Length: 73
Image (cartoon, rainbow, N blue to C red):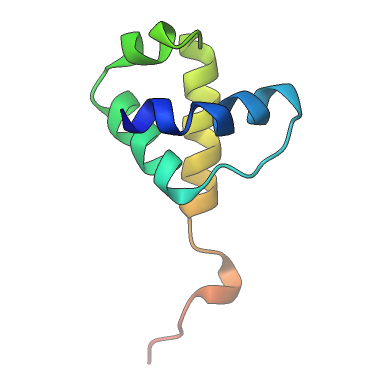
């Protein structure tokens, strides 16, 4: 159900090349692709390669930026 709720975000990501997938959708994609449930993505019409692209985007967007790292002494 969660994947279906963010399928519009994924469609816009690929059709319009807009990089604005929300954190909830990224969490859902991470759970699905991390547990080898690629068939769930393909059931919505996405290829395994597209799933990997989205996962790569989500991984990169969740990584801390250098500006947000705290200095520890």
